[in-house]
Length: 587
Image (cartoon, rainbow, N blue to C red):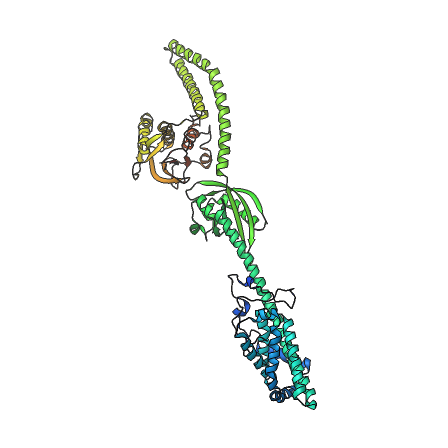
């Protein structure tokens, strides 16, 4: 018995002991305290009252066992009458009991080796014997025995020891009865002793089974919690270290988690996006958002999805292309979250586009070189003939007009050859520190002739400091000239052009952003999408290569040119240039 003064200590699960592992021999207690060392919630019997079985339950169980064993009120009377007669033998019974325990190493290990422990246990066993004979044998009595069974689970005592201990006590009490009690009373007392010890044994065994089941359930719960904790830690390690954009979102698209590398890729911190709608933050275009949302819904019900590609809008306003792998995660509550891992393939696509563009330009260059070589002589002969013809028909105005038209057509053809050759030729930049504001002003002055045909004004907004940037001034002047000429030709007279010059960040590098705005009619949706395509133009004159060449020149500087959003009439062209210039000066 390990009850102290009829009660357990109530300290809960001890630090260095635990229930035996299922399947072990009942004669060997195997502590499993390591399983309880996890930093989880307290075990069941610390979270609930010690007497978590109700009085009604214990009373009903005790009455059931009494009926099964045939317990009678006369048994209780017989035990109480015999108590003063047998009490002198209790010390000897107790000595015999603990001497036998001392001869077995396994029981000594379970009960402990404290010098005070034997004396405490002796007093406990004496109280148990007194209560066995004089107890009320009601629900309160049953509770003390129930606690014994629970305590045996806590210290890891196999029930085989309980059975052996009760058997030894039963034998010693029988010997005492034969020695102290008259034979005519001994039969009734033996029957009462057997019944009361069987009652104790059955109550202890029942409590042991109940408590063991609870401990096993708690152990399994803690193990499941530990596995989930490990899984969560592994997921957090992936979130922190993977060089990908990793987003965890619920079924409504609300962001639950956002990886550190995703912060680097998008420019948004986790604090800024967690709790917000993913589509609202990263896919503001309704048409694109609708397509991506359909894939999002499909991915929530698909065990694993790979290879879906879509662009997202990052903090600086640019678009980056990602290929996604997704996996739905079912939470313990039943909620489904979508884990999305995105790989930024923007550099790859841009490299592929550049390689394809290089191939195309090389082919165009070879074609134009050959065409120009073959046609140069013909154009020169044609030019000479036109000049001679003009001299011959000086007195014939109609013929002179026809000659002038032919000359204009030939000049346009020559300009086309030159522009196509420039577009196809490799770009060689010679960069230096240039004041961007001054370069815009100089370009505007050089357009004096065009401005005579199109009355116009230019306003350049104030910029903090001198906006110096490492660029090729001749190449960038050509870009500015193309943009300004387009505004002059399309603007409403008087043409008003405004230039906004601000500091910015582009691909994690300091940059300047220039926004050219005019008061023209603006661009159609088709023009906005095709304005930088070679040979695309909405003018009656022109090659359609001006903006395509401008794009090549800006990108050769490591920058970007695009059509800006505008709520007012007119067109906005946005040019972003890194302050330190291109990473490589040859493109």
